[in-house]
Length: 208
Ligand code: PRP
Ligand code: URA
Image (cartoon, rainbow, N blue to C red):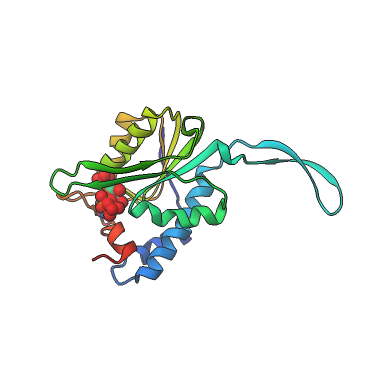
C-alpha cells in the first residue's frame, strides 16, 4: 500500500520549526499536536459514515455521522502520547488504547511494558500514533500485537518516517497504510532519523 506524505507549504514551515533544536518544549508539543490534527483528517478521509437524522433550527434532515465504536487510536508510549491531544481536539469522544514500548538502545529491538485496549478492539479500525518511524521495530511490534487481538484494519500515523521504516512495514504488513508529514533521508548508525528532529520523547517531555 502506498504511503502518504503530506505535502503543503504550511506543513514544511511547521516541520522546520519542529526540527530546530532551539525550539522550546512548549512549541514542540503544540506543533506535534497541530500536525497530528492534519494527519488525522487525511487518514480519516475514507472513514465510514452512518445515516442519522437531526433537526436544524429550520428543518429536519437526513445526514451522516461517525460511530465512535468503529475506530480507536493507539499511541505508542511515550512519544505517541503527544499526538493524542490533537486527535482529541478533532474527535473528543475517541477511544484510546495504549501500548508501552521502548527501544533497547543496543539492539534497537522494541520491548513491551504496557498494553491496554478499548473493548471490542477487533471490530475497530485502528490508527496507531507515533511521531517517529525509524527502523520500524516499534511499529511492527505494535501491529503484530494488535493483529493477535483480531484487529483487521490498521493505519499508522507519524510525523517523520524514514525510508527504511516504511520498507520494513511494507515487507511485513502490506495492508497497513502509513501517513506522515515527512519522509526523511535515512537512518544513522544508531537508528536515528536524518535530518529528523532528535529524540521525540525527550523533546516532548523535556527529559534531556
Ligand atoms: C521512539 C519513537 C518510536 C521509536 C521509533 O521511541 O517514539 O516509538 O523510537 O523507533 P523504531 O522505529 O526504530 O522502533 P523510544 O523507544 O525512544 O521511546 P520513548 O517514546 O519512550 O522515548
Ligand atoms: N526515535 C526518535 O525519537 N527519534 C529518532 O530519530 C529515531 C527514533
